[in-house]
Image (cartoon, rainbow, N blue to C red; front, side, top):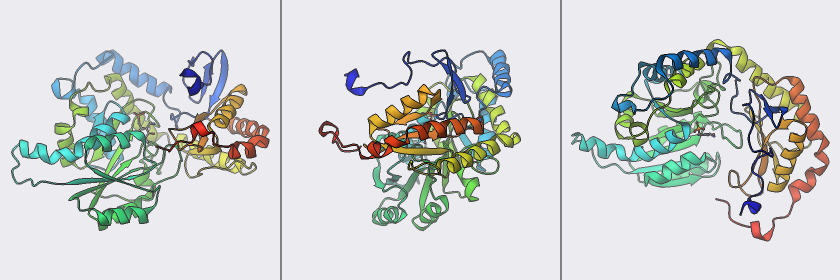
Length: 409
Ligand code: PMP
């Protein structure tokens, strides 16, 4: 079994000795990661660590309660207020992880009218729900939508004509369009203003997973809506605290009524312990850092532009060049792994993303730029890629083996 799965980890001992900021240690070596979500390099910053330490000393290590049952510290409310403010929304609801946020919220939304009736809102009529999802949405979205039991339709990636056709056909009373803001494996950005227009036209809600946009896009790091300069009551934001904010957790930023309904009906909120209090204290600090240390975001985008410019010297196809996720399309799964291994030998770490995370034969090296990279780091990556460029044609043309000729999920 393990043999056909191949090696999942670039390192022989399967563990790293420190976490990328973006430099890290593994197998006694010093490497630079081009595949960390710690975009602003704040996870191990002295300011964030000092805040976590304050939280640790004040509250201890874990929160062994649900917030609904005695575990609601003021710092969670403060964190939610800060998250709501940075998304220009009335309210936010905190979850233990981003994954849990998507599966919890998306599986719950179609149940909320039932809860309203149980709690005595007798005027609430029977709603029918339908989800409309981009085909490349994150797996946690797909899981949440599937678990909801609601009708679902999938539109081709970023194909708004296809989406409109599906919206037109639907008879559901509540239509919810769901999209990644920045697509996690392709790095491109959902066209939020156009999606909002469609949401208006078809009286739909728009749920945006801004995991890779929060802290990264927009002048103040507010994410995709700040980037496009749009706002709407129809928008529900989902975000993670485990990427640019450098901690762990997920959240929804939305209207007060929706937040209240989720606190009541969403078991992923009420029936599990919440994130540790030291994390909450550190994350309040991280939200401030994202705003008052704008030089981090400036360095991230300078590095993004420098990498894209340097890659124009080489013939590797780039999946997109709009965000700090700049994936290099390699094609064959084995070739992507081999290229990642070759880079690791030069102390450069890049994830080889393979089926089923991406469609079969669309394996790629998912390069993520970081505020902590130097131009020298980027030069080393580009030079190492140049050294393997002569294999490129063979990589892209590698034949599909009969045993691997299976449908993409
Ligand atoms: N949504 C997207 C688009 C993601 O990329 C991820 C993490 N890879 C998640 C949700 C889940 O976030 P977390 O790791 O905080 O659970």
